[in-house]
Length: 107
Image (cartoon, rainbow, N blue to C red; front, side, top):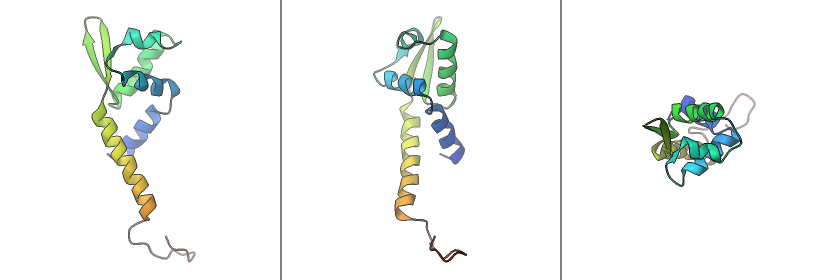
């Protein structure tokens, strides 16, 4: 996962409603109408949130007649977790090939 993908996922998860949607979907696939019932938002607003979550592959959408059903894309979350773990691991271990910088501090 590259830096752009990581940033896109962070932006998508930077909205409280989208985090709550993901939390709802961890219980299983839900129809958009059932997701909407859990929020005090309009259907177009929910569609906007679902579009963002779908475009970055955090959720999967499945059309069933006139209704959309959504579920968590755990593959993307797993890749995201690995990427975040890699960032944290590099911070803990320090940069490879540490050397002195111009100010005399070790980097």
